[in-house]
Image (tube, rainbow, N blue to C red; front, side):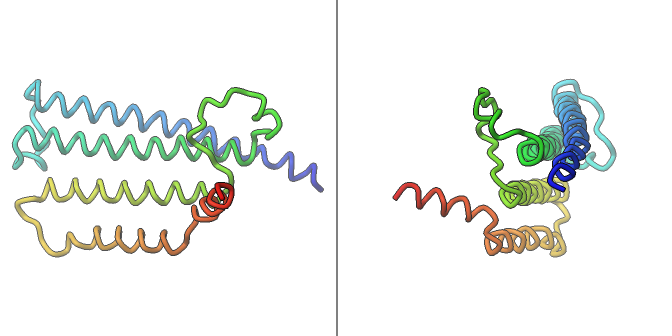
Length: 176
């Protein structure tokens, strides 16, 4: 039975490969949005009608915020792919012998991976809120407060879940 589960873990390659391909695609899309910011600001490219009420600097900032959002999602997919690889594919004995290139992405358990993903989702929502405020600055209404309220509630929920707290307590105990 143990060998069956050991072989079945290789199905996670599907998630790893698809996440890496999606991450690459989002990096390209983020670069295209960054180019659009330069094109509007420096090359006087005509902006879309939805952004025509803004001046060129604000349109460029809007594109840069959108590219930041896209890059964040790309990094989340990259971290997810690395986390799934670390948790399900990597052999722990071989990993200790190799040079660790991505030391900053430690994924000791699935809870830690979920915590990283949840934190980045909150940051992405905050960036979306900034984008909405920038684009609709002249016509801001009370219903725009739904997004920051959601961000606050998600943050409080993440704090109460304490997904990353288990590892932090272990590290605190090691230091004593």
